[in-house]
Length: 107
Image: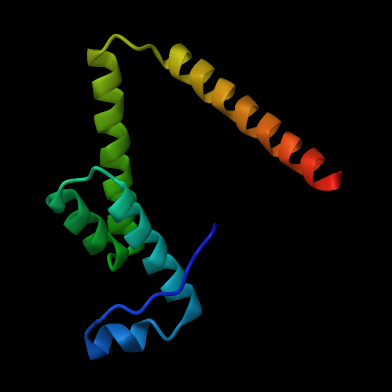
């Protein structure tokens, strides 16, 4: 990922947490996604809350999100087979793009 270091005012407690490189990376990714997304403030607040949640709580939230997606796909008349086909096609596209990128760098 192409990243740029910036200065953002935060609380002292947040600054202490951000001393850890893995924490900076994780929270930087969240911030980047939040800015680039069309998520509502409530959705962003929930994502931020889940960052500090227990593994069990994050797993439960993920399970609920998948259940919601499954229900939405059923309501839209999309079959599991169609979803699998689309995922496989996207995976093939990513692999082809990666191979083209590797080939271009080798030149």
